[in-house]
Length: 312
Ligand code: PYC
Image (cartoon, rainbow, N blue to C red; front, top):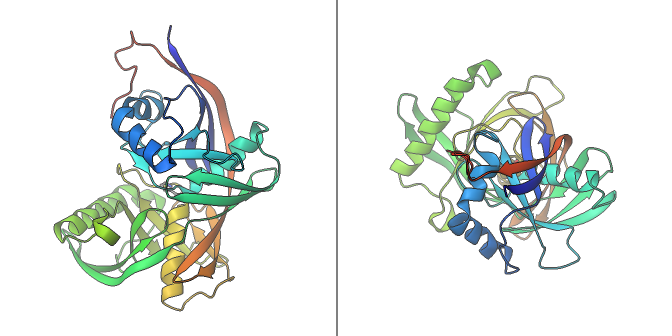
C-alpha cells in the first residue's frame, strides 16, 4: 500500500510552507531538539519526499507537526527545507498558526508553539494574521569585513534571530525582483567568503542565511531585503528570523527603540512588521505577517515510483 502523508499548503507573504499533519515518521516523545536531530539523521528521506521535487521545489519549507512535550502547547514543529532542518522559521510559524486555525485546532488568541530552539508564543487573529514572539535574538559581531570574489570588499553583521545571519548593507546591488539571479550570485559568494575566512556564529555555528538590505519601494516601509536561505533558494517573504536578526542589529546600533515598529519589505514587496522588547542582553522580536491556505491534500509515496522519496 502506498504511504500517505496529510498536508496543508500555505504561503506567508509569498513564501510557501507545507504543514504535515499526519503520516510522518515516529520520532518518539523526547526533547524536540533530539527529535529534530533524529529526523535529520534517520528520516531524511521523508524530508526529501515532502519538500523536494517531484512533489515540491527548492523554495518549499516543510513544517512537521509533532506531539508537544507539554499539553499546554498548541503544537510542536520541526521546520525543514530542500537541504536539511531549520532551527526556527518565522514565515513558517505564521503559516503553521494559520493552518492550525484553518483545521480548527486553535481558536483566535494566544498560543505556544514548541520549536527545536525554544517555545515561541504567537497570537492568531482568527483570519490570516499571526504575531509571533520569536526566540531571544542578538548581534554577535558588528562590521565584519569580507572579501567577496568578483564583488570586492563588503562589511556585515553576524546576528542570531533563530538562525544565523550575515547582514550586509554596503553590497552595491539594487534589490529588485528582476535581479534575483545576480542577487543569488552575490549572496552565494558572500557565504563562500564567510567559510573561506572562517567566520561563524557563536560556538562555531555555520552562518547559513545571508541578508542584503536596501531602500524600500514605498515611504511607509523602512527597508527592502533579499535573503538567501540554506539550499540557495531565496526567501519570497521578508524572513521572520532575518527580520529578528535585523531588529537585534538596529537595537545594538541604537537606531530603533523597544516598542517602535520596523516595516520590512521582501524582494516581492510583501511585508512583515517587527517590534521588540528587551530581555537582559537579548531582544525578544515580535514579528507580524499574513498567511493563506493554498491547498489541502495527501502526498502519496508509492515505492514502485523511482522518485518516491524525492530528489535533491
Ligand atoms: O521566515 O524565518 C523565516 C525563514 C527562514 C527560512 C525561510 N524563511
